[in-house]
Length: 173
Image 1 (cartoon, helix red, strand yellow):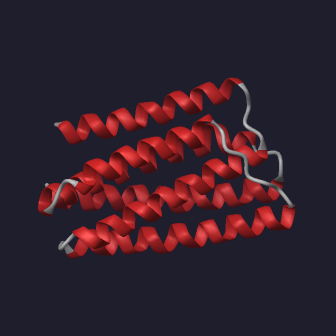
Image 2: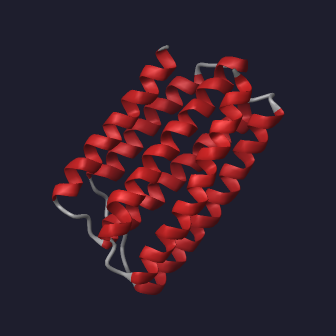
């Protein structure tokens, strides 16, 4: 129950920050920073999972999260360099970073099946939140067509991540 409350708390923190930003439509540099931050967070979570899990399905999932998010972040860095855009920190990226730090601390205290369940549950919640933010705020707010295209590609990939996480979570019950 504590894990579920913690995951929901992090999701509400991100939702609140995203909702606050929605009043002031985010700029492309802010969107780039949010998207990149979310990718870094998931890479870090995957690395933690790979260092702790002994479950083959969880390890395979974490490996794909690390590989995919690193690849998308490389594309994002290449795009901001090409466009000569400096990503801009903002309330949403700050809220994401704080929630991720808190979650890493919680996950770091767990081991075995408890860790696996908490990690995968967090991945489900995180991907749902990021996918919702992409679909409802970030993609519609993006002004640059190349940035919008990268976000749309990312959304399709991350929706698959959410489904994969849900599948792994169901198998862990």
